Image (cartoon, rainbow, N blue to C red; front, top):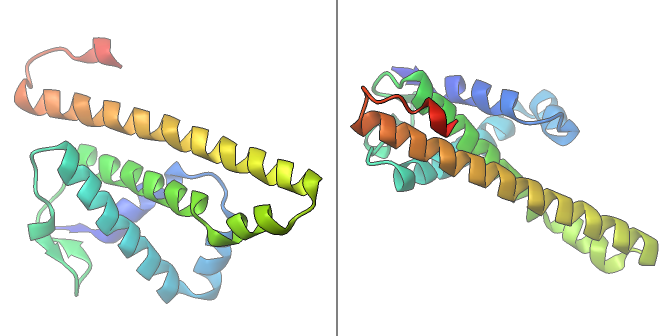
Length: 151
C-alpha cells in the first residue's frame, strides 16, 4: 500500500517556498491535509487522463492510502501533477485577482506581470509533465527500448 503522504512528499519537494502553505501547515494541519487530498484527487484525474491506468479504484479515503503499491514513477507523476494543480490554484487565487482590480496603476502593472509570470511557469510545468507522461507510457508499452534520447 502507498500512503497519500508519500505523494505529498514529492509534491512538497516539487514546489518553491510557499509561505502561505507553510503557515497553513503549521496553523491548521487538518485544513492543509484536506487541501492536499483535494489536489491529489485532481492529480489522479490528470494521471488517468494521460495513462491507461485507473488509480481511483484503488483509493481508500478513510485510511488515506492506495490499496496497492505505486511505483516511484507513478508517485513522481502524481506529485508533479499536484504541483500543476497547486500552480493553477495559485493563478486562480481570487485575492490576487481582486488586487489587480483595486490597486493603483503601478501595482496593477506589477500584479499583472506577476500573474503573467505564473501563467508562463505553469505552462512550462504542464509541458514538462505531459512529456514525462509520454515517456512513462512509452516505457510501459516498450520496456526494452532505450528512451533516453527523449530526455
